[in-house]
Image 1 (cartoon, one colour):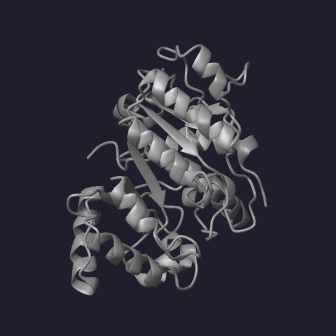
Image 2 (spheres, one colour):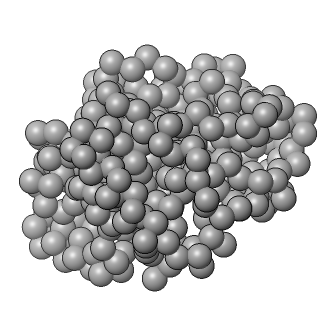
Length: 317
């Protein structure tokens, strides 16, 4: 698989500084029951990288000491880490808001039959991948049968109160090398079509720009579309998106406990402080981050293009 990393490191992207730490986004490992075409993590069923119980303990200690408001759990499929439920229980006991980035199909994996009930009982917010409301587009990205299981998963979550008193947000990714359509308009389409076809509902729709790294980046290179896509991101740059970039208030943690400015930098192995790779234990000893420069590259244009893109959806209307 061709690597886009060398093409992204040198950039004239504007300087960005950190604000106050609000969110710890923790990657619990690259093991996943799916192998999606747009996955910037290159996750899949054969991956073995999983966060250890010791590192999970360091995450919890940081939450305690720094009073971080939000724990954002991702992967792979984060639920497949054997310490996922322990981390959720302990974080919720601390009063921390917990987000689970769920692919929906994991709800039907062996041993996960009670996962939906567990998430609901701990009032975990769910951000669920559903790249499109059309079956063909979803299965083109995620594999045959995924669409049906995703709908079944949403129905199961709806029955537990998700989409009403519990938060269930859906995520849209474009199929190819294009920007997402306006988030508000697409959300209206999702609501109408999912309700009409299946009687299901959700809280909000987040539109995410596909990042030119890992699996999706390799596809762009193989198709000769990388240069054109990067030019699209540059041409669509909006400086007003800089103020609301997710990296200004979030620290990304990999499965080993090392720190990054964002999940994308994690996949590109661009550490939080380039000259001095930092770990959770370092942040426990010295939590001063505000005012530090954020490591940027060409891929950052993906977050600031058009309406903007973050793990919480569009940055602007």
